[in-house]
Structures are given as structure tokens and as C-alpha cells.
Length: 343
Image (tube, rainbow, N blue to C red; front, side, top):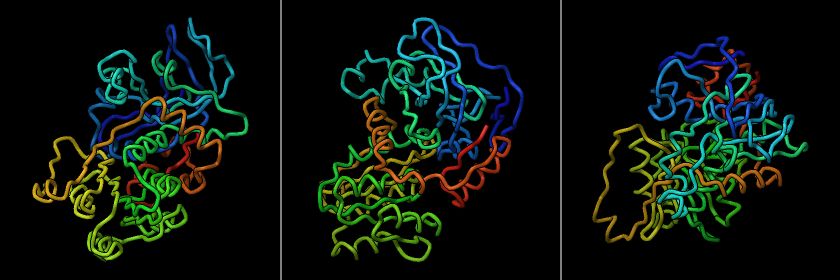
């Protein structure tokens, strides 16, 4: 089969490789659509020790497709079914799974699915069991492939505890940020403020539901947020970039007794400064939010099927898999939203 192979930072090649062989409980899926992701961009630009442990490696993890082969003991799925699956799954039985925190299950790293930028992808038994869903004929593969990132956003919004009438800031208006904007509005936020350097993303943010957009290259976003909130700061701030400066900004623009959600994953070893006086006396809530739980996958797919997410705003380009490197460069430069990769 043809596949995009990750060889190292900035080095992705389109090659002929063997079709994966599946075992008991597994599925082989013919990839109909794969989407680029911010994590793919980070991996392309700086590597990713969790997703890519050895090279060369198959690449990509947001996809939907048709079941090509069913492993022994699989009873819920059949050849020819249209499905979407995530890139990992929990064990269901460990300390964190029993605490309803399966997103922290140690087994996640052993069940990681990579290889969506290829003609076929193998889905491990745990992912088949927990995080694979049949999709209706009425739903396009392209839209269905948004299920995994949207599930992460559903988790982030759940942890944000947005209340009706809240002012919410989203820092970073990439595809994840746009979905955060949409769901913040759906959850009752009266004012949503989005901050992003890219004009394209600011324009899309307004269409996604943002009431105010900020260009941080032209004005201080912390000062602007305080201007818009009578000097208090926002009720909820969600950081969706993943760098030290914006983590610190997020805390600084959160009101006393407000909530800061650190959604964007920063590079390993990154540290940021926190004013402990402000944190303590201002009674701030600061949360890290990682990944998703199986219940979020189901909710995300239902939101997409119901049309509660404007998918047309999230996928801006379509490119062949041979141009995956160019696609990731474009996305990293803020020139696109997600790109649908055709096989």
C-alpha cells in the first residue's frame, strides 16, 4: 500500500509499504479520509516521543473509512461497515479507569494508532472495543474524521465548567480553538473572545461564534480582555496553543475565582511562571486537560451527526497524501484550517 512515512523532523516521505496484518479482536480499515492535526504539525516540526518512538513510522491519526477485514472474535463490526475510530483506548480496569479518568490510563501509550496517512490502517483490540463507531450513510467520511479532535474539545469544555452568561476567552483559533468557540457558545457563554495571530483564523473565529477577536501582534490580549470585562478578566480562559507565553497570558487574563484551562500541550520540559499571590488570594482554578474519554467520543459523534458543529469552517483544503509535507507546512504557518488528505 502507499503511505506517508515519518523519518524525522521535517522529513515525511511517500512510500510503498506492506498492508498491516491484523490479529484477534482487531480491524483493518481502508482509509477514506484522513485529516491533518495540530499534533501532526508539532510532530513534523519537533518530533513526538509518545506518538513516534522509532523511525521510519506510519503517520497520522484522524480518519474515517470502511472495514476491509475483521479479526477473530470481533462481533460488533462487519466487512464493509463505515466507521470512525480514535487513536487510543484505555484498559477499563486500572486505578485511573476506575476513577473515571480513562484518559490517564497507562495503557493508552500501548494502544496508540498511527498510520492514517496511508491506504489502510490497523485498529488495535482495545480501540475496537472502546472507541470505534459505525457512522451513518448520511455522514461524510470527512466530517466523521473530526470525531477524535472534537471528543478532546468536548472533554475540555466539560472541564471548563462554563455557565450561562460567562465570558470565555479562547487563545489560539486553529481547528481545536474553533471547536472550543462553537461549544463554548453552545454551553451558554454570552461573550466569546478569540485571540490568534493569523487573520484567516480570526475571520473564521467570528463565523464560528466569537464575538470579539484579538490580534496579539497589534494589542496586548490581557489588557484587551480586561477592557472587555470591566477590569475583572474572563470567567473562563482556555489556552489552545501550547507555549509558555500563552499559558502565562491565560492565567493573567482570568478573573479572581475564575478558571484557566491549559488545553494546548507544550513541548516536553516547558516550565511557566505563576504569581503565587494571585493564584492563592485570587482563588484561581488552573486545570490541565488531556485527551479524551470514551464517553466524549460518543458525544462528539452525536454532535457532528446533529449538525451542531459547523464542519465547513474546520476543513479548508483538500490535498493528496503525496503532498502531506506541504500540507503540514501550510497548517503550521496558519494558512489553513484542517486539510483533508485524499488517498
